[in-house]
Amino acid sequence: MSDKMVNAQGLTEEEFLKQYDPDKYATSNPALTVDMLLFTVRDDEKLCASATSSKHVEVLMIKRGDHPFIGRWALPGGFVTRNEAPEDAALRELKEETGIDEVYLEQLYTWGAPGRDPRTHVVSITYMALVDGSKLKVSAGDDASDAKWFRANLEVVDEKKAVASNGSTLETDFRLTLSDDHQQLYGIVKAIKRVENGVVKREYKLLEAEGIAFDHAVIITYGLLQLRRKIWVTPVALSIMPACFTMEQLKGVYEAISGQKLAMDWFRDEILRTGMVIEATDNENRPWAGEEKLYRFNPQWDCSVVV
Image: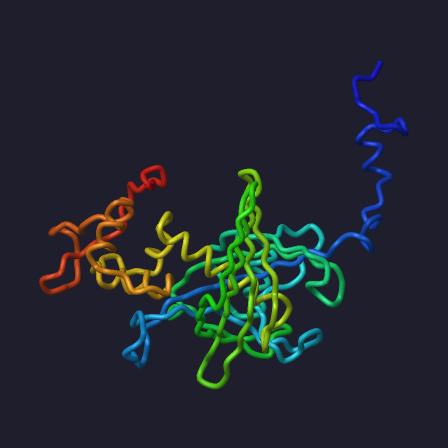
């Protein structure tokens, strides 16, 4: 008696796979794409009195050269081909559309609501990276007619909270603004956080968009919010810092990403508490910094020290 398991039709796994039609669900299953969020932090050319930081966040966008949303700006991305890993597709599409390669991408989120793409039901796996934009040469290619960095600003324009016997609902409307020297794009995104019997549920809705393709205003908003969280619990911000840096330099990066002005004493205490940075020693090859102390990434950092 064979010890191989069979299904209801009496087929072993080997027999099942031999007669299986890989196109069986091709016309009914959602298509799979990847979209990439590349953020960088740059110095402001002109600092106005009301600015919270002398630095700002930028996101890489490509201008669509074909339908749908021809002429609008989108995140670099494209379809995953058969027998291709999503991570490989992300690196391939990033190279084809922007000329950028050798970037470490972290998987961020999966978006799959019907109607987010007018062509068909499309599920997109998004990836994110914080990079040093000054070291990357951007050039449009494939079906992108242009590729460039846009200054990204995210602000709360409305917030409502409702409390019920079994939990609460918090609705926050964000305005995302993307701008360069010649144009300004924007999107209004509603973030909904529901707490029901101790279970937290989150939802994001695109309310309005101008110049931004698909639901990418939602994806960028989500990515910025996640980046604001990650800088306090991971050393992601240190990836764009020099080997040795002052606390003032690091604070500028954190202010740009968080969109908030941070008091130096508080910031220094918070960063040192995480253990992600340590003071550079005198025998290290350190640049001159006047009277300021220099710091560097702590190679022995472990996420378990963050509370």
